[in-house]
Length: 394
Image (cartoon, rainbow, N blue to C red; front, side, top):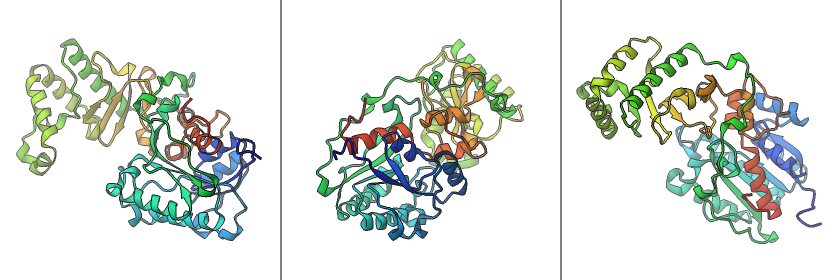
């Protein structure tokens, strides 16, 4: 049978809630084994796909795995993520890759599709990628010389989510397809209105702290807009605007450039901004990281009710509503849709990860699970490119 008509079987390791499963089933493939260490993910996977995943993949008897053609794995990203300690292979989770290699060596599947965070490509100054690539070569598979970095924006999904997708083909099957040019030119125009639910439940309305945060920054934007003040592109740190640098010299030395820019901005506009700063600081809920702001719209003359924003550890990140920032596995960092003054719903986040609307969501763990999931459309396009020779971008 030709590669376009062959019914392939696959295994889904570090399966999460089934992004790989959804993608490969869309191509007519059959899953013969899944595995994930997270119990809540296993339960939701079984609920949706009627297949009960195994637990810890290191406990699976490799010899008992049914025959399969494609190995998929979104192996743990925490050892390589910028949000973590970046310990890589020094972290036990980073060694899951080598456990996966034992399965590859024994079963010799035709194709491998692996996924990890963007930072994986440059982790440990490229040493991590070289170790992975060398191991794949020794296992008798072709892969690309450099990490393939894809963004969901390339596929018309209104979420900016960069991921390394490792595509491998067993050497006896021939060489890999030539990669198309991958760059920002591939980005397609998107808008969040395409994934929004109508009449979202009131439980997604923002809490009082977020209301105060929105009002405070909206007043700041109004002052800037009215007085034709360009909103800084560098992170705004209001606590440093009028702070004596000698009170925290260590932090000042570390962030001299940004702090100097903040203080210069404040001094230049102090007459207009000091009343706002004084009143804002009197609000009991305007404390901590929400006193920082990252303006990522690229424009002026905008207000909070026509923007997308989220309260993060680095500050209030504000951008336009054309797409969401990367979904993360933290409910405290879910984007807020300004036009409706609410958080994105779990269903909307599922849509941002390209799960169909009949996918059953685990509401209790949804934001964490969806933040960790692989994007279905991205994986399906990558798999069609690798296995069927179809265009990566359409």
